[in-house]
Image (cartoon, rainbow, N blue to C red):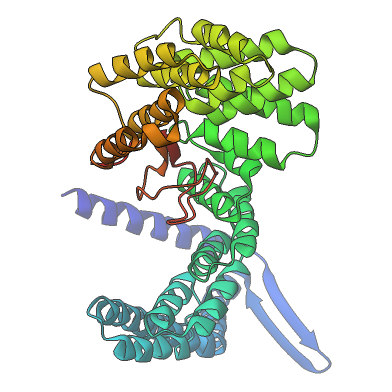
Length: 416
């Protein structure tokens, strides 16, 4: 019903328009030399409207003809893009299945179809790496790095390649460039830290280290590379504060303080380190400046006052007593060490040395041999060992010379 009413209203309006046009007066004349055309105004309007419509249709048709080649190219481009995406999908499936040659063919097909997307370059690089063609992979990653929208992806691939071939200097620069693009990439910070460890750039490794890293070892190693004495001293202090039981840091910091004219502070550092974890090098440094052997006995008693029953305390007191000729005191300490059940080979070696000091080398030969036989079956003495591979070390070092692990060497007993 409403539709019929609308049609009726339109017809009424058209009829009213026609009546209005019929009531208009005037004529439209066109003259050219002897030619003359004259129309009433309503007739001219009726003729102009169809002519306008015909002209509009002709212009639209001409515009459509002119745009036909561009539309054809666009359809072809979209078709090539669809075929290229299909080829990329096939390449990924082939690569996942281990069919690297088939993956290479599909990647090449996608490239010939005009695909130059970052996805194609990444897949091209991965296919090249799977085929062992590192040069082609490098070319693809460099092409990625040259694109502003995919530079980070290219740098990531180049970083993996540099690490694989052990080019740590290049890896350091690439990782720094990548983190400048993505400052919040935590894995990249870890990569930079690993690269710094590989390069043995201890200062940078310390700056990039995580809270779980061996900061005491890294700080002490960085101090060894620091040319500025003030900065080296601060790094040694940081190493000692990070882990007072880490004796190399305590010894280095105490020596630095003593050389700077602060012997009291140096002794305080040694005392804190000993209380945290007794270690022979600390005892040796504690008495090193005292030439009087009897005075050394008193100094060691002061050092070991907080932990008198520790095996290292027994060993230190026995050592200085034996050096001072106090054989009775030395035997008392060694016997107490034996009775504790914690004696190692050093205890039996000192007992053999004590026999020689008390009875002379000839008279004590059998007793010395007996103690040395006991030492052969006693527990191995503590020493510097790598906590990663267990290899023994001559002394502390930032890196294990056996497995190359950084910050893993510590003073510990032999592994069971």
